Image (cartoon, rainbow, N blue to C red; front, side, top):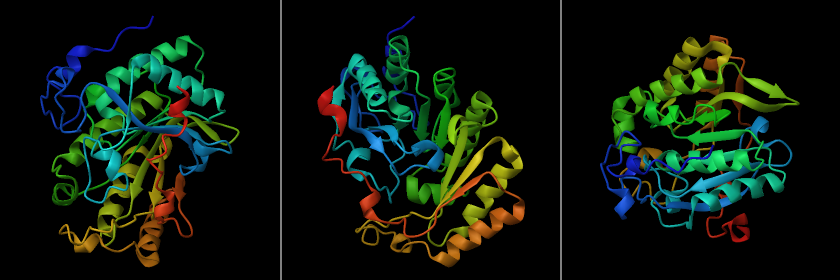
Length: 309
């Protein structure tokens, strides 16, 4: 049966490793820049995920406002900083999921959902009671408490986590999170425990974990260390998505990060791919062609299907 969201989780918020302790129930914004009121920046059919997530009809993507990580190079700064979004009740969020199913989405794709997990879990339970049958995708930066991921056991079918960094120094510099690696390892382990080996039907993933890694300029060693760890730990129980789509924000050099003011070169990306092949990685996605384009970033001034809720 449907249960209301756990209101105590946000009374002194510790949903993510920031453990900011904000009383989000009483309107205080946490590190994520959000209160306990769920805000969604966009709900739409999205075509820029892995082929087994997009399919031909698009992934039913729900972009949540705010973010516990907020990387300096974030492509979705407007929503990560809480500058965009429509407030939805649990019932309205449930109806959003059902509307995306009516629009023939391949799945329900929850983007940056960590700080709203109790409300999302409640909305998913309600939606499933009302006929939601699509696979649920949890799309995260992996800065997660294992306990938060455990709340989703039985609700989420596909995990789509990032593994961004290998060095604590790099994670501190770019995401103010020197403990990122240890939390990401534990969170991904729990995700794989829940999903087990990948399951596909007609080329579409129905259950499993795809770990994404976006290569950063000048950091191919970081990438190689991450891929080595993932393959050594999980072998073919996961897919690894190696991405070359890094798009430098216009102000990144002025903000004090000149090394991130360029795109990844073909040589850098090729070096990472060659390394993965040398390890024996076969369950992988790679990107070809010109993927580092600002046009791939959604228009968050357009709320998608939210006006139909």
